[in-house]
Amino acid sequence: MKNNQKGFANVVLIGAIVVVLAIGGYFIIKNKNKSTNPIVSPINNIEDKMEIKIYFNDSNSSDPCNETYEVTRTIPKTLAVADASLKILFSENLTELKNNYLGVSIKDSVAVVNFKRPALDYLNNTACIQMSFKIPIEKTLLQYPTIKEVDYSIDGKVFTEFDA
Image (cartoon, rainbow, N blue to C red):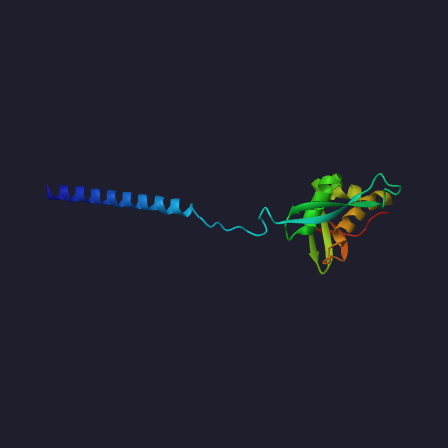
């Protein structure tokens, strides 16, 4: 009978330990989710906005190949302002490039705008079509003091052999 009592006592003891651990874990998780002082990133704060200028192609001008007009947009504050500017440009004006845009990198004052291969249908077309796409991109990027030159790459390889 003593062995049965010891076995029963061990089962009760183990059960009590499991219950205590479960209750303790519940309160730890509950208190962890009750943070009264949440950390808010200054970059993602809704109140932190910035205005950017974007240069749209002016297809209604007397020189639709070269003319642009400036628009201002308010966006969430970001350090990736060149990328944000191009995304708006491709969403609102040069929509043919939107799905082919891969990103922009800046090194030694040179912005390299990276596209998928189908973007060459516009970037390597007749002179007028090329300029109607490149001039808005370049004017939008060259307004930033860290950018002095704009190059284009296709799938990560800088492209310099434009036809026109």
